[in-house]
Amino acid sequence: RQREGHVLRAFGEEVIVYLDGEHTSGKLAMWTNITPPGGGSPPHYHSNEDETFYVLEGRVAFLADGQWRENSLGDSAFMPRGVIHTFKNVGDQPSRILITATPSGLEILGALR
Image (cartoon, rainbow, N blue to C red; front, side, top):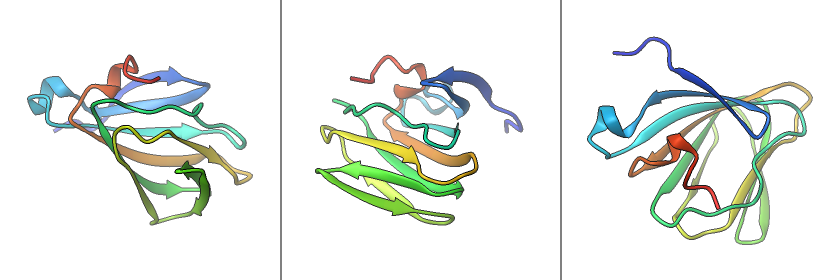
């Protein structure tokens, strides 16, 4: 059991990787994004991975299929592979999102397009 994850920086955000493909036989990856107000990822898609997002803190808007949807504490969003998507912290405090990718691979951030 890992109490602390491996900390990275991506797109101006702190990314804490808790589980990666090495520890899950490639089945999934799980990490937390800590995003400053106004921050978020650029629009992208994944060819091989589905992503599930769970908002732990803050207000986060997700874009998928051309529509923005705002989420807050306890809300979740699912982005299937192949769908162009992004997210943005729309609050005035940092947001924290727990993200799971299935199968693993995104923890190295090489799969972003």
